[in-house]
Image 1 (tube, rainbow, N blue to C red):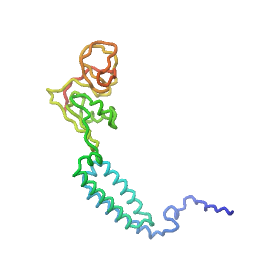
Image 2 (cartoon, rainbow, N blue to C red):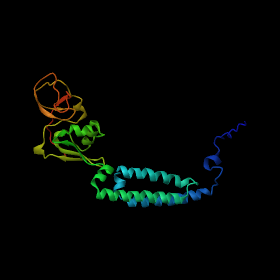
Image 3 (cartoon, rainbow, N blue to C red):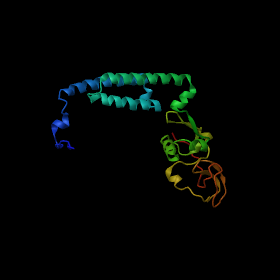
Image 4 (cartoon, helix red, strand yellow):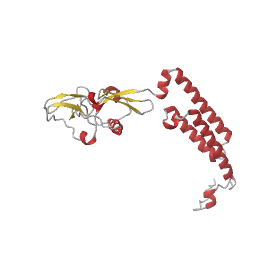
Length: 239
């Protein structure tokens, strides 16, 4: 049995680096043409999906971007991929997009399955503990996003919704209606303790539940059963 060995690779072979043995420099002009046509197809696809997909992608729109990106990249410079295949793929994907958009308009259940639905994460200054635990979101991530909206403590918030797009919608109390709440400042959270040093309103550092506590060595939160507390914060929101 004869053994065939591949030819050794010559380092810094500029002919190999710039062009394969089957292609000539003139093929570069075809690559330019392929790029122009594929780019125009991408622009047409984005025009169909609308501006919202550029600002905030749904799961379905993200899958479209991944699929179109793959075919667009291959079509731009692989000589064995004909442009007609790219046109067929683009047309099929855009047809699916329009079809699914139609179903999301006529069927709320299909829309919720395809794009997700809004979820109430926080109400009256306290996390909806059961709902929050079902989300792919940590307390640290949530508090970080709230701080970016100049929230100092949860008592300033009437409600927080996680929208289908993944963004948060915040509804604030008027200054006169601000409740005592859990401070979400990192330096304050670091002071959480199981020991209640002074009597007064305290906030559970896990779920944000607030209640009056007397001095004690430890007290379990009635909502989440955790035992770390902070004195509740009552400052008004500064805008």
